[in-house]
Amino acid sequence: MKPFWLVLALALLFASWRAKALGRVGRGAAFAAAVVFLLFGTSVIALPSIESIVDEIGGRLGAWTYLLVGVNAFLETGAFLGFIAPGETMVLFGGVLAGAGTIELIPLIAVVWVSSMLGDLSAYVIGRRYGRGFLLTHGARVKIGEPQVQFVERFFERHGDLTVLIGRWIGVVRPLVPFLAGSSRLPFVRFAAVDIVATFIWSVGLCVLGSVFWQNFDQVVSLVSRTLFVLATVIVGSAVVGLAVGTRRSHRRSEAVERWIEAQQREHPVIGRPASALWGAVTRLEPRFPGRRARREPAAEDATVQDERAADGGAANREHPSE
Image (cartoon, rainbow, N blue to C red):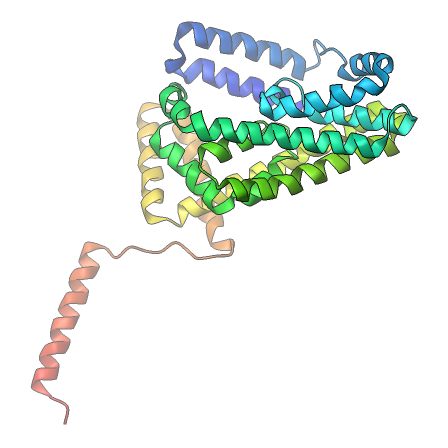
């Protein structure tokens, strides 16, 4: 069983069922892709072994491996190639060849570091120049509009540094983080400073890991893939919980969520009932999380009572003036 492919298949199945904006052709394509991913996830059919392909190619390339690994590290974020093939596989393979003595470790780290950093900077520039307009123009098809774009911008304004640093280790979001940082107008100097550190740690870590365990390439790739998947799951889950708790503690956003749930329960019970149950769980768990509790907005009758008390107090002061 492969959890990533199964989750992706379920997401595409839901999109093919509910996303009317995709049209019949788009929904059909999403359904077909979901079936393929479901077969991959259940191991009914197997993907080609990337490790064996890379091993065959790398054995013939020799010193040209520097170029192969460097170009892949650049294109992963610079051309969003990471959505097709995760970059850590190729970097680990370069480390394996360094451990076997085919290439040198230090030059490999330098090539991977510079290439991945240039790829991130290219994606940042693309996002800075075209990202916001692209999202607003084409995002309506997947329910992305001005409010969602502004939310991402506020998120990067508050947590941009941490997102760039951690996002480098999560293959699913790695190709997107620099683009979103640029489209959110995260200051270039701030982005570059964090990205230099993030790409350096990533490059050193993977190259050294591949070099140390060069005789067990398949096992290392499998271990790294599973570890990064677990890391991504924990981070995304924590972010979702934090967002849910923050929404519950905001009077305005909490009311908006409750109105949406009520509408879904009337029109789409299949969605509304699970959403109501999840929101109920968030409501019960929210007081146990640290931070500010939800602020209770004074109701209209409370304000009236306060005004009456203030008026009574003023009358009392006039009847019994202080000496």
